[in-house]
Length: 83
Image 1 (cartoon, rainbow, N blue to C red):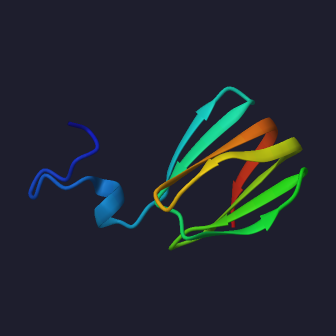
Image 2: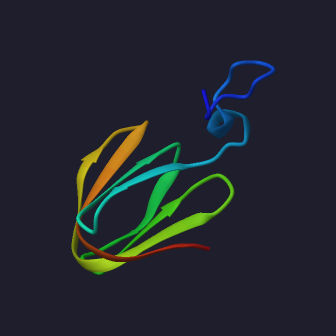
């Protein structure tokens, strides 16, 4: 499998402490392996990960789902940046 370290069969995101991001067009983004939400309003959501901060900008942004493992952000997504 492409997302697994060949030596130990452990996913690379776990080994490298990376956040997983999946976008569905401009309407939805799913994040996994994050630490916490730093900023939350309708124009900007900032999510702290272990190595960086993810900044989602757009309009009518909201958190559809949130638990300790994953988060789903909805709205009109115009920009995703890593700080």
